[in-house]
Length: 372
Image 1 (tube, rainbow, N blue to C red):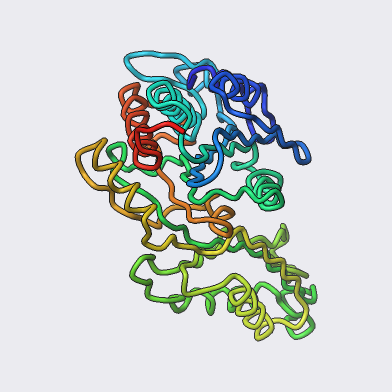
Image 2 (cartoon, one colour):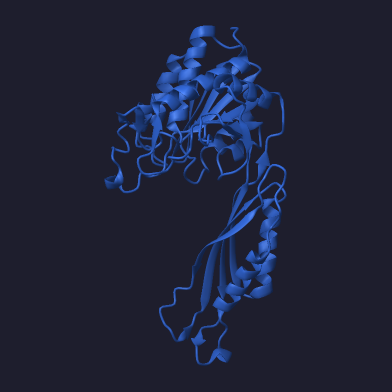
């Protein structure tokens, strides 16, 4: 299954047959599959059983581009098995996890029948891109029909050195911003006749980076502000530019809300510039899943499958869990993430087997060994 998914070159927002493959497989297992297309994005929601508990596995079939193919030792969309590894874009992030969960579900259903409750999968084709027409839209659809899951497990590659060693129970928020400061162009020999926007921008950025945003919390590292670009576009050495532009990103913990950080940034800009353009873009708020019976079940399952309890973590970038957290408790658990998005992305076949066993343990914890 993992190799077949890799052979679908589903670079965002293309599907390339990946969700057709999943739909056919899941229907063969008895799931009812809802194909949900929004814009150019293909999504699916598959469900089996009814009532509570409703456990949902979430993932994405879209992948990032492979980059320069000449640097790969294998076809990035070939699904090649070599030396006990499976090679290809998406092997780790996250077609391997989707395949492992479907295999775990198939084995659980074969052994125990239809579960007492609801087992579902929410699979999007828009996680690596703008994430506008994927999980968020499917969640709205689920809310409208009254079938929001009780708990959701996202198959992102969270493990650090061993499958199951780390479970993400939260994520930092992410805020991007574009700042353009307008000045008055002039000759460098007559600065009194001009207004240099580069000076204003440098002073602003210096002020923004002078002090830490916070000292972190019990569950999150300190928030960070990183300048990602400074552009003036001035080829001349004797001209004061008319405008200066910068871009930045803030990864913030649960001490902040996106709206407050946007207001803070704009207030700072106003101290240094009268004429400016400010374009903030909030990718997601910080969130954390509180301790619950669901996290206890997840911990027991990981311990049962691996022999050791997982570490809870909130680091890394953003994921679709930020959308799910607005509707239901969510955690993330998947493969070792070292090779994701890289040249020669690959996963050990032993890790796929280990993750399948782990997901089987999760299903046993949620649904027990009995059938409906």
